[in-house]
Length: 83
Image (cartoon, rainbow, N blue to C red; front, side):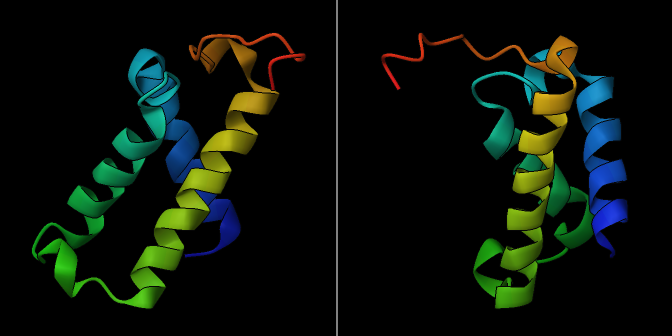
């Protein structure tokens, strides 16, 4: 899958349920969804490094999408001084 494909897949999932995928628990939720769709027939222990790298790509795409599309971002906002 190319970067654009990861981005498109991730964008579509976030847009379909922004409160889930754009919220605090959105990162593990989007990775869980990816595993279910593409590796549902395997146990997590069977995932190889390439599969785990794909999960990281989905996570990075989610963060970029939320930065560019604040209407999907339902994470609590922190004061920059706290960060």
